[in-house]
Amino acid sequence: MQINFIENKDQLINICQQFSQSEFLAVDTEFFRQTTYYSILALIQICDGKQIAIVDPLAIDDLEPLMDLLYNKEITKVFHSARQDMEIFYHLKGALPEPLFDTQITSALLGYGEQIGYAPLVKQLLNIELDKSQTRTDWLKRPLSKKQIAYAADDVKYLAKLYPLQYERLEELGRLQWLENDFNFLTDNATYAPSPDTIWRKTKGINRLKKQKLAILKLLAGWREELAIEQNRPRRRVISDDTLIGLCNNPPADAAELQEHHGLSEKFLQYNQDIILSLVEQGLKTADKDCPRLPPIIKLSQNEEALADCMMAIVHLSANENNISPQCLCNRKEINALIKGQRDLNILSGWRNELAGKSLVDFLSGNSHLQCSSGQLEMPQNI
Image (cartoon, rainbow, N blue to C red; front, side, top):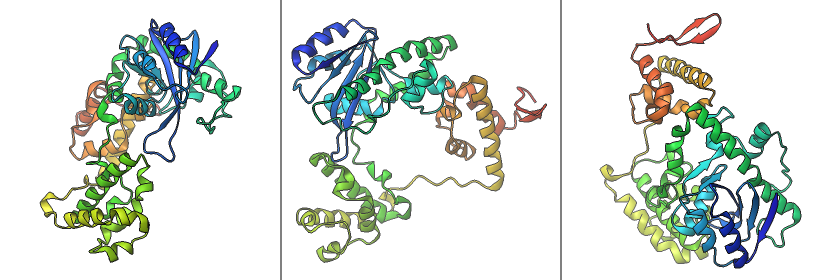
């Protein structure tokens, strides 16, 4: 298959015109994200099943012809594990390319395993062993070697072969509609928009905090996120999670106490100590009723743990009957929530509800049971 290395705008316009009538395009990106908040885009690979384009965004200032192609709603964009690629496009354009097809998500619905990697999937479906020697390559370095270009091309060459195979199989099984919610999540701007107001929930060590200490964390973590975005630096390089937790556990009352905290350089405090002290003070003054709260930790009794085991068995039965991954249906956390009375759960909506959710609710209500027959676990339809 022909590989076109695209490094100027004329070449880009030409290849985009050639791709513009395609029904689908296999797409992948290479990027670098160690010293920045946003990923640095290093390559964009595209394949229509006939030829491959490797676009060098470091050499082309104006990528608008490519953006027009990728955001064409008449063309399905095919990714494998699309989330990071979509995050890059959201940052570039403030919107997301759609419609989308993710071969990793569909693989779980076709029985190839949960979150299967691209290389194992190519091996399973196409019986081709991919070269993995360039996995940790520096994609920002130029010029790229022939081996690097070939490796990047393979990421879309076989993706373009996987798509029709998976689409046809999903159609045969009547499962195309099952993907709608999962794909909608990937093409929802809210999935990728920065969230300074809620980022505190992702802080390591958060379970040690309560009330005003959580209020301090919410304020500091939100400010850190905004600063990280403004400076385009990883949030951990602005202030580490450990340092944030330390500030919450031992709130500094003044500059002297603040300087005693580890992880805050003199230069950093020179510019930021006033805002940190102000946010700490604001958090301490937060009324109990206004303090953020962590979601309750679900604790099951011994009987409930046994019940959860039985319900997970039902999930596995349904998964086996439908040749899909159990994790694609439901996890233990959702089962625990279901036992405790929560009903706003993925397992109780759409196709998941049809395959397993209704059976789980029936079992909880005493309207069905599990039994062993001829050494096999089964769930009779009626009792």
